Amino acid sequence: MPDWEAVIGLEVHARLLTQSKIFCSCSTTFGAPPNTHVCPVCLGYPGALPVLNRNAVELAIRAAVATGCRVNERSVFARKNYFYPDLPKGYQISQFEQPLATGGRVGTVRLIRIHLEEDAGKLIHAADASLVDLNRAGVPLIEIVSEPDIRSAADADAYLDANVSVHRRGERLGTRAEIKNLNSFRFLRNAIEFEISRQIAILETGGSVRQETRLFEVASGETRAMRSKEEAHDYRYFPEPDLFTLQIDHAWVEDVVRKLPEMPHARVERYKRLGISAVDAEALVATRELSDYFEAVAAGGNPKAAANWVRNEVLRIGHFRIPPEMLTKLIAMIDKGTIGGKVAKEVFDEMAAGGEPPDGIVERRGLTQVSDPAAIREAARRVIDGNPTQVAQYRGGKAQVFGFLVGQLMKETRGKAKAELANEILREMLDSVAR
Ligand SMILES: [Zn+2]
Image 1: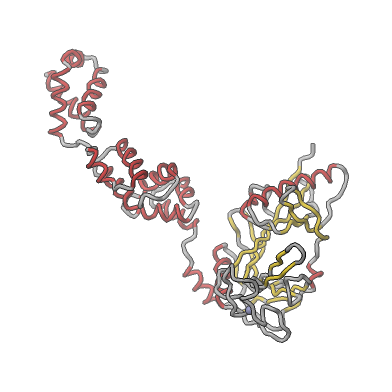
Image 2 (image 1 turned 90 degrees about the vertical axis):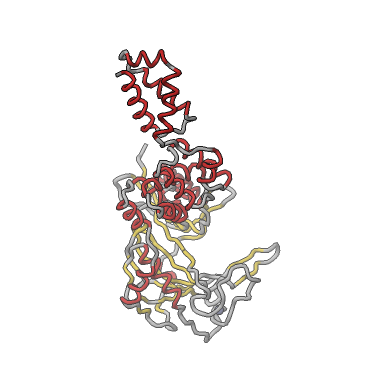
């Protein structure tokens, strides 16, 4: 059985959340009636001229710096020529030889480039006709192209368009097939898994994989040849004559960097400086919501305890409905010795169920930890008086009876005596009785 290795590269299209389209002032709002957000520019009328949307460029720079790309000082828009009914101009304005940004990485996957381009319209297939809606034509996109650094469908999960090829380990890379339009995580995984086994089956029976574009069919879970894969020269790229070279100066990039929210890896480093373990820190930045919640709890002044409570208890209940300031208060009550750890977990579950603040729950149920030495001494006196046999045994040197007596003392205080203090006081009293 040969040892096959899959090689997967991803081309991800991400929509930039601008108010207007990339080359005209039409709205990008989704869900409007067909062909209401259109103008001569995005309808591709002859003679209409594109004007670049500064905000689209800014958002693309933002994506580039967030993924560690180098933003190129000069980049060039290019016409990508092809015919399709949802593309009235007969070409898409994209970037080819000189993209906006190069390099960078997402996790362990290296990026080749990020470039700006416009989206096409949408075809709607009715029973007896196909209709075209051009509201989406000209919506700004970035295409994020990765190196073929991914080796399994699971690794590829976070991406949409995939290039797949297989080769025997140690041999040169195989011919690749491109799978188009994978618009859900599940389809992406299924399509890649199908494609890997399809290519292995061909190669194992002595065949060869054709370089082509394939379409994933949801019903069968298979990929099907769509067309032989175009090469870049099929598109007859040439620089877009209606737009200037895009010049991005250093100051603009610096400004975007300054306005960028803190990235997850930076948060991890900051959490570690607060004394949180690397494993906990990584877990806490899994989502923005979790990370923000943790920070709100940690603001109460005990970040390590906050990390423990959020990682263990909040993730256990699976929601963020306990206001962070209530959890902060609970942690403070433990720190102050008002309640012990065991009682705190009970209070937490009640907070999760009913939304009552922790001090209210403790008060109502009388859960306050007893750390008043006089009260504990009084209870210890009752235990000593009530268990003369065991006290005598302890005095006689039977040390293990102490555990029983502590148990009685905890029972006497309904579990609320502060454990260390109860131990200390009881031992002291037993020893003085012995003397
Ligand atoms: Zn328009």
